[in-house]
Amino acid sequence: MRNREIVTGFRKASASQGGQQECVEVASTADGGRAVRDSKNPGLGIQFYDPHAWDSFISGLRTGEFEH
Image 1: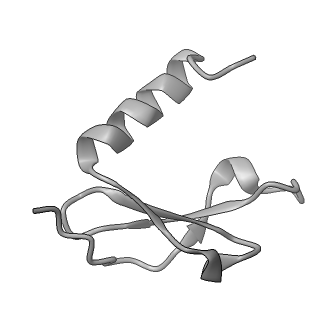
Image 2: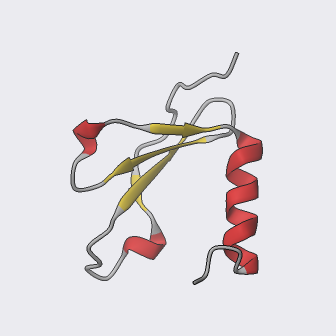
Image 3: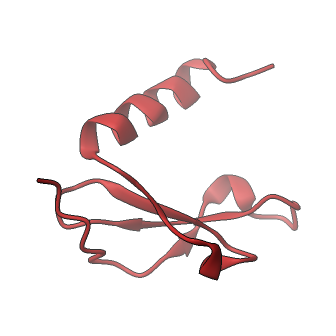
């Protein structure tokens, strides 16, 4: 079972800096994963990612996997 306990405060993602319209906040979880929420509407809910999923996502960002 994954531990979804959030162990850090949420911080705005670096890609969301500079007044962009789509902003997310990220926090660390006890199992080494991440919790992600909409910074403009944090009450809408939180998505949780286990450490492997988060590492795969970051790797994809770095290699340009998600570029248009």
